Image 1 (spheres, rainbow, N blue to C red):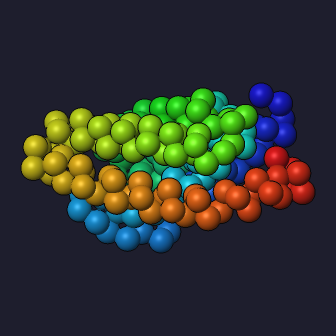
Image 2 (cartoon, rainbow, N blue to C red):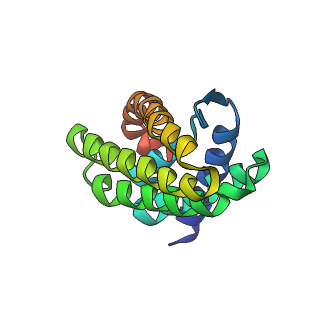
Length: 161
């Protein structure tokens, strides 16, 4: 990773952290936020490694700052895998088909990941709620990403990606 890509990845991780914290709309056992959109952007524009770093670092830091330190390690793993997988699917193949396939992969990773993470921490009933709240969060992120990604892709040369 060259210096320019490293700096962009770090900036996107910081932005993912901020957009995971603000605005925060409570649902079920979690909340809806815009941080996942930044994972999609990093993975699509900078590749799997950047997607993994932005997801893992940005979202784990948001958990720590928000007062949910018990989720730092699960988030580091889940969002890191999510960013990496999205990047593997869509990097260099930025089109609607790959975007949808990457989104479905993200839905599975996040929903199953948080369900399994919450089982020992919060119990079966609360973990079941994440099977509803994770897809709601995913749908919002996919919708927002579908709006912002065409703009970023169209202007990627001008903004330096």
